[in-house]
Length: 324
Image (cartoon, rainbow, N blue to C red; front, side, top):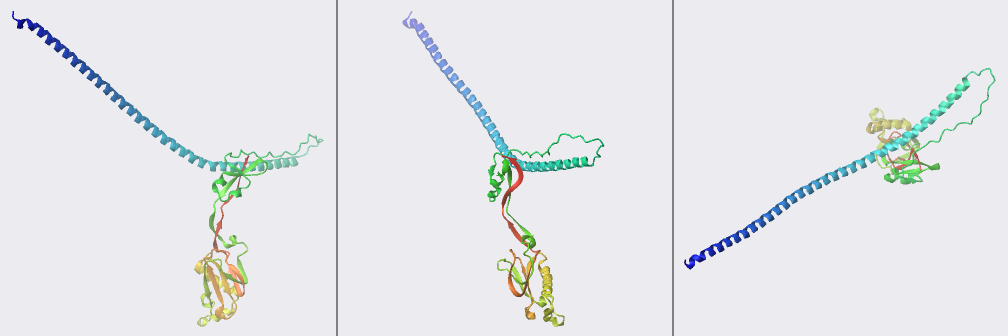
């Protein structure tokens, strides 16, 4: 047997051992790679699930926050609507107490009347225990709103609506009177109401608009007021008219041009030559016309003229009582 033939089994066993070793190395590497890939894929899936849960929780929080804000707005609005009803309730309670007191008073008078009209029996009167007159119970009020301010007078809050409507006026014996606010406003009133006793007709005075503003239709003469004679429109006919007659003719012109409530006054000239007699008509005044002494003049301040009147804001007791 040759030497090469003897060495062949050794070579074959060596090759087989090398192949087995190489297979083990590749097998361990593949197992490690597959384990690594499986671990990452599970973490990715867990991350996706966690993100979905986080997004869902955020959306739920957002919806609930919006609901809470809307509820706060509705509560604030309801509180503003609730307060006038509380004030009305106080007013109705006071009215109820007054009506009940009136009814009790009338009922007592009715009982007295029945006693006086009931026939008296012939037997001797039996005297019973005498009782003093019963007094009506003092009215009971609810406790004043603790969030309101107790002040000496509602008038001290004339310029502040919020402070006025959140206060009550202290009165005697622990009784409060809620304050109510009336805003400033402008309105039109007849001059007789806005300035009582200062309208009408005054002779020996002239109308003056220096401080009253507005306009005037000046120097209306006989031909303008229908006081001229028929012959060639003779203006001298006005000489036969009294100041009252001239005023009445001027009133017709004023009412025709401006309406009964649209002119503030008329100044009448009833002396001097015929061409100086007549009237002036005043309109669009924002204050009462002034009257100044003047010979041969008369001033008519129209009581029906609608003049603008401004009223200041006021804070005053509302009549709604409470105990403090």
